[in-house]
Structure formats: structure tokens, C-alpha cells
Image 1 (spheres, rainbow, N blue to C red):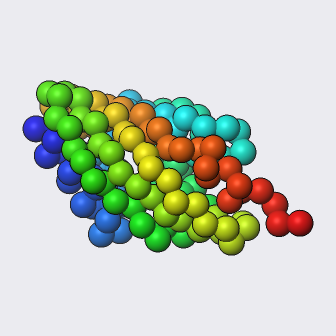
Image 2 (cartoon, one colour; image 1 turned 90 degrees about the vertical axis):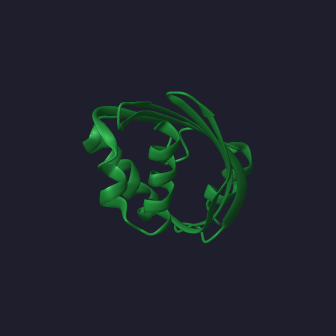
Length: 131
């Protein structure tokens, strides 16, 4: 069931169906994005409203050119997903292209947590102001 939910999330996001993707999260779910404070996604986003703001921040900060999951690893209620993202930072016009790993946890038919690990060191130059 977990693998199905995570793949469904990725399919919804890939189709731009963010409301349906958000509905897959439990009310008390959270997303944690590891990274420096200069990254607008960094931190823990707890509760469905905060998760909605997290997705809005993605849309407001980035023009996503590629978000591709290359491998799904099923471990029961936990699913690990490996992939790559290429995005343009709207504030600077600079592009980053980095690998990522996600750890998803589910309970029943809902997502209860997502921990995101991106190569934020390689992303950092894209956020630096243009001189």
C-alpha cells in the first residue's frame, strides 16, 4: 500500500494536480527539508496547512524543469525514493541540477511524513544574488 500511495503522489505532482497530492497527507503529517536557511524550503513543515504552504513556496521560488524519480525502494510502511531535480530559481534566474533522496512513511492510506535530502551544497550557488 505504501508504494502505491507514494507513486500516486509523484504522479499527481507530475500532472500538476497538487490538491490531490496534498489530500494524500494525514492531517498531522509533516515534511522536513534538510538544508541551509538560505534555501526557502528548509525546515520542518508540520500539518496539512503548512505542507500546502511548502508546495506554494516551491511554485513561488522555482520553475521546475525536471523532477524525476528513478528508483522506488519498498520497505513496508517506509518507501525510499531516489531521483533528480533541475530547476530555475526565479529570484536569480540561475539553474541547479541535483540528485535527491526522499524517505516517505505511511499509515493506512495516508502519508504521515516525508524527509527530503537534496544536494543543497550544489543548489546554493543558484540562490546567490547576482552581482
